[in-house]
Amino acid sequence: MGDSQYSFSLTTFSPSGKLVQIEHALTAVGSGQTSLGIKASNGVVIATEKKLPSILVDEASVQKIQHLTPNIGTVYSGMGPDFRVLVRKSRKQAEQYLRLYKEPIPVTQLVRETATVMQEFTQSGGVRPFGVSLLVAGYDDKGPQLYQVDPSGSYFSWKASAMGKNVSNAKTFLEKRYTEDMELDDAIHTAILTLKEGFEGEISSKNIEIGKIGADKVFRVLTPAEIDDYLAEVE
Amino acid sequence: MSRGSGGGYDRHITIFSPEGRLFQVEYAFKAVKAAGITSIGVRGKDSVCVVTQKKVPDKLLDQSSVTHLFPVTKYLGLLATGITADSRSLVTQARNEAAEFRFQYGYEMPADILAKWIADKSQVYTQHAYMRPLGVVAMVLGIDEERGPLLYKCDPAGHFYGHKATSAGVKEQEAINFLEKKMKENPAFTYDETVQTAISALQSVLQEDFKATEIEVGVVRADNRIFRSLETEEIEEHLTAISERD
Image 1 (tube, chains in turn purple, brown):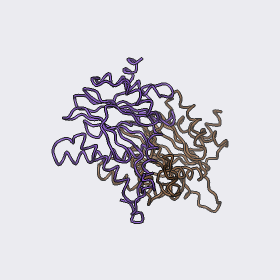
Image 2: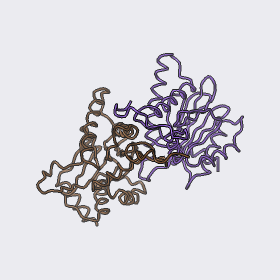
Image 3: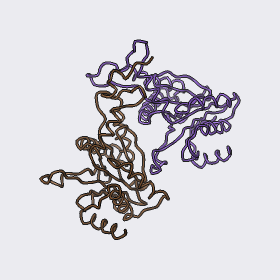
Image 4: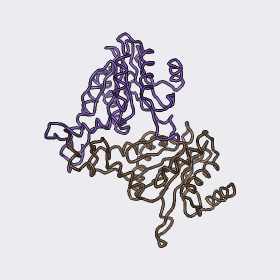
């Protein structure tokens, strides 16, 4: 990838042994809109703020939470355009796996392949790292799973995690509220309360997005009406 | 202790600055403003209208060759604000892509798919060092068979959104403030109202009354889905209607 003029890596070690481009990429993620995910006993929920630059933007034309496969969904914090690239690549990898093995790709495999792509962009010539961290939520034979992938390409499995502007408050809140035996609906309420913690302005079904997957193994983005119902329950 | 600014190269190619910003992308946005014109787009109930200034810097120039409004297919229009050369390159590639889409899939490329393609291409320029971002903000308009009138705006960073109304160029923020007030109650503009809102928004933020030859207006309508650039006489009629209304 990249032109031969740029067949040297732009991400190089500093004298202290750091890869500063990756650190800067993480800073870009940290200034992005807050997103979070919670793994329940019977499913996973991911959610994000959806603050648009103006009321003139048609919010129905924007969907931040995306499917990678019917049973795996993802959300990001950071640079939207970079996210679209990763979604496209991951979808293709999932489809290639399905075509080869005639089985849906396991969540860990897809996360690993996506992380590999992100790592390649920290080492290949003439490119910069991705300015996004991903939360990948899926349900396969191993049950509900939640992974976070960073611009460096490292990934971890989480019980609950948050990213973006309000990460430290959100994580503290989640640490207090998380229980191992939480069910999906409780997790959705907790997700909404966590988003509310650092939310600037009035929270509504028009400025947040929620995606969930349950034992039915179908990842779904909630409609604004469904979000309104959950918001009412939380009040 | 993290090393400073990437050796100063973070201003020259699209690598991250210490604050996690892409300076080249931000400079591309400035280049769009440096072109010196403002554009407006408004989506109505069953039509979309885009308006831009037509500044012909030299009397010896052939006026008809100065345009920022381009048909990409019969049904899709593209209003390019920014560096003219970059605009032409983008339009040529978009026309190619739309034609291939029609050939491959057997139906006309919808406005949002074209907008996504443009935005994805712009994203590549923000990530690969060998190409700079284009200094163009593109507004794509068309009537979708299922969803009705569509107006999308794509920027050098690779963002794209659907808009009820939007603006680009020098007076972008003033125009957006003006349009936010007009669109607050989610009005369902008729074709004439859509065109006149767009033109009067431009007049208001630039604080001048235009002659029909000083602006370009492009429209698509549900009852005539072909993308059209309005003739001078038609622009005259709308300008007259606006001044009589005020």
